[in-house]
Image: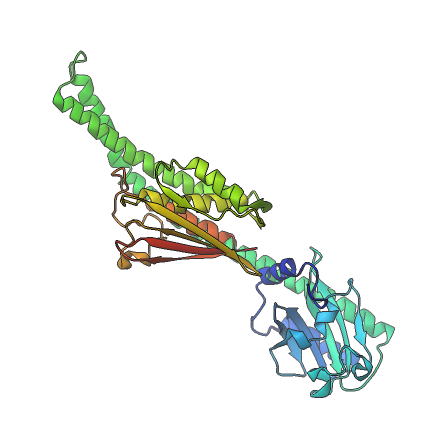
Length: 397
């Protein structure tokens, strides 16, 4: 880890992004603070910053027009390394760390003072800072005001975060209600019909001679089996979808890819089917229950809708500094191009039957997408009819 980065940089970046303030428009509440600080400290420049991976986003910028700056030249990079204290450079021209910095050599800013904005989880998100074109010192009162106003900035951050969560909860509630309405529609139509068949056919069986069954009776039994199987698939799919919400409550933990794929292999009845996956023992930090369910649904679907003589599923994985990336490729039926844009929608199917002759319910992929998005990730499909499909998704570390 670079000496100019906190030891927990990946976790810190996750905290910064969860507030969803990066790249937002200027707001009066923040601009009032930078204006007051510039006035109290008698400086030409005052900033509220958030440090992203490679840039310094300026939520409020008094005295300059910039909306962001490169992180590698920012004085704030040093400020967030401080333990909840003021970081000050009286004359950057005499400081080996900054004397050749473009801010000093080109913009002629030689004085800097900043307070790290440390949230309630202990992560420094950014700074409240000031610059001046001449060397100087701050009075004790100015230092106190700078620190207190930094706490006010954090309060605004937390208020923004809680409002964002509330808005998201309202959206999710609306979506749940929409899904409930769709479910009610299914109950009154698609699910009601199989139940009616079961009742009617059962009655017919009772009227038959209990000592022997005719060919027609055997046919009726076949109808019962088909109807109950159809109903069972719907119910199992719906339970799987709503069970995905419970998986999110279990939180993150350290595990390995090999442990996850071995568990999935145990759950699947493979029997002469080829399953290729990375046997990596590298530790990953994920919601294990959610990831297992995502991968199981995708892999199970890949086999179910595969009529190839030698069905094969190939899973690959890689990670970067921020995300885990997975790819699930099969040699199955493929998905028609006109269905690909809606394949993740609730109750949407391709119309294809699985290897048991059962049509899908359109719930499994909707559950996968819902889980991935709730984990902060995304998923997309690459497929060609008759040549198989590849599902690619990523989730944040």
